[in-house]
Amino acid sequence: MRWALVKVCVAVTTMVVVAFAVPLGLVIREMARDRAFSNAEREAAAVAPALSITTDRDELERVVASAASDAGMAVHIPAGAGDSGDVGGGDGDGGGTGGEQQAVDIGRQRAADKDIATTRKLGRASTTEVPGGSTLLQPVALSSGEIAVVEVYVPEAEVTNGLGTAWAVLAGVGVALVVGSVAVADRLGVRMVQPAQRLVESAHELGEGKLGARVPEEGPTELRLAAVAFNSMADQVVQLLANERELAADLSHRLRTPLTVLRLNAASLGDGPAAEQTRAAVAQLEREVDTIIRTARDAKPQTAAVGVGVGCDAAEVVRERMDFWSALAEDEGRKVRVAGVDRPVRIPVARADLVAALDALLGNVFRHTAEGTAFAVDVHNGEDAVIVLVSDAGPGIADPQAAMARGRGSGADGSTGLGLDIVRRLAESTGGDVRIGRSVLGGTEVRIWIQLDGREPERRGHRGSVRRRRPAKLVSTFNRPRSLP
Image (cartoon, rainbow, N blue to C red; front, top):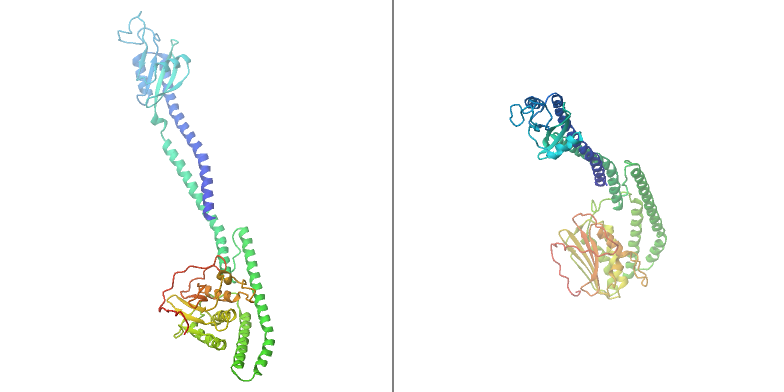
């Protein structure tokens, strides 16, 4: 918008300058020409009194020499214009009392004879173009009644004298006006663009989850109204999210009653591996419900930066969750393999989030594959990324894109599609991603790419899209076997 205003002002100011400067330049040129010919008329008028008194050559030469500023004046006297002794002097051609007098030309003639004759015939001044400039032909009546013509030469340099300076001044004024308009437009553009930029930045911050982002209500009236509307919308978003958190906490709290009954019933199952597993599952479910309630109650409007002050040991979490799921896998006759968890692997993800993601993926393995289907969890530690692979030997996923889309899980098996969405959001919170493919076990492989360099989360064009990323530089290469031990 700022540059658009500058371009508009430059265009408008340029048109105004051209509209005024061009006619003014032409007027200045005409004024310079009129000044030059006015001076020529004054020089011709200075000779007219002498011509009305005498036509003597010597006298006229002295008058022409004193009246003209240079050698640019000439006098043309027709034949028979004087009495004996006036013209010709000692000249044998023109002397004598009874001889016919000849035409007399004093000074250098530049105008054509026909132009001089035309001026003498018409009896009024005229101008004509000659090499190097122009001439003014001024008719003068003699005492004898004849018409003499005074020719004054006006060089081209005199006609254009001062014209270049005047045009330069006009051009300078025009440039100054254009530059001034650019400066004014730029200042006006800043007053309009800065509030708009703040509005854009606040919109981006709100989109990134920074719910405390607000826009100062300043600038032009329209932008102030836009800022007021944006702030009102942000307040409404915060209120809606607070209501959703309250609703989540209330709904989670309602689960405590059936959980209590379930825990009491599990306590009465007696001893045995199945009973212990059931009681452990109930206790784990109760802890998860409590975590949901606390998280919903303690959530703050301002979302914290990803990876700042938050992190866990991925290897420890994987070992813990595999210990939990291994008992159920043993009951169903499933072979389990875990690799890459022999040393700590720090990632910028909250422990609870990683636990939820792993439980979602492992739960899908048990839910969507037959008993006895093997599965594995591999952890690859790289310089700038950690990759967690969850693979199984099941039938695989026919449409990975649809599986990644929230809420598009197959309705036939009761899936809601939220599990993979939890995993996707966990990876994207670090700038990573999730991909679904075919595992070396023959079934599904879900790869969770967790970025370690703290880059901003990337935005997808649409949910479930597949990104292409440069492979991470792994510290150690893990070769997955073709079959489980």
